[in-house]
Length: 389
Image 1 (cartoon, rainbow, N blue to C red):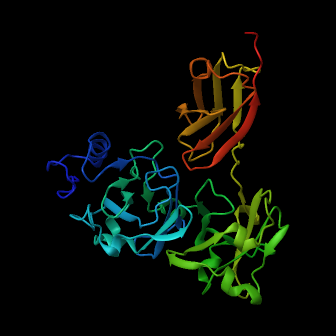
Image 2 (tube, rainbow, N blue to C red):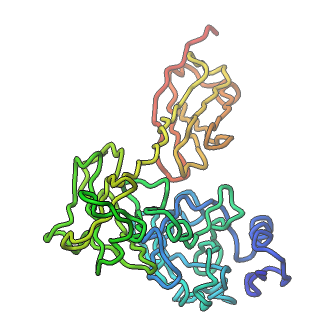
Image 3 (tube, rainbow, N blue to C red):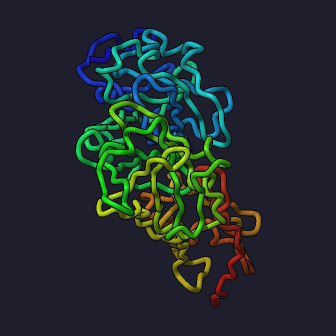
């Protein structure tokens, strides 16, 4: 249950779900809540796996939302598992403020159980949205009913608490975002050179990660020089966690083609070790990287005259591009308008006949196309075919 904020300018009425509230905010012209649009482009956490009692940072990329380019502050408005800033939708509390990182990236630091004021054992996920101070600009929600779901979750440890030896999150990790790796020391194999036994690593006072990438091509060894870097955090039940960003941790070259992360676990003096089944090194395969499709800008027709309908199409627009705008300069005449469509394909239909019919000896037109982020897509002069009078 999440009531509409009583000071938001809306008529006071309770609705059973926040989804209905967002719908109302989007549809009604409000005196204060004037702009609600845009799925948050990316959400990630540091560490990637955290518990309700851990200190964690949530990162949000607001590119393409109503908060794109915001300079006066962004605030958290969250209603699950509780509503810490209830009653302050139009005047957010200081504790709900995010920290600006760079560009459109903002960070929110918290200990979830403390911030929400609920029992840690009851917390499984977090729903909310981002807003400016007075609530006149808000993003779409981060919540399980979004497509795809983008709520922030407490990672389910049931797999690693069972028979699994290793686990990690996110599954679709990248080299420039946080990755958390878990090991259940009680399930790993040791004494591989003699008679392998399972669980010996759980007897160690500490656990470190000896690792490399692409069949150990680049390594961070578990040795005296790297003990602080390789040490894992014990989170209970013989489970240990390490948090890293692969680019930083391994000092990877730019555009490094990651294929695998190779791992062996051990204590600080290698008196105990932990390997995979059959005493194999652990190997985490890099996720398949989706092919980046290059945007394409097309003009129809190939030969253009001032008596044509000009069609401009742009396909495979980049993430965060939600609108395109054109300005055509023909001598002293200027035409402008917006493209129609979605990020997959946006099209502009431009009648040149009527506005250019009285312009004599027009040989070229200039076309400037910009996106919703004020980025220039193209600035081009196009020669016009000369038609007989």
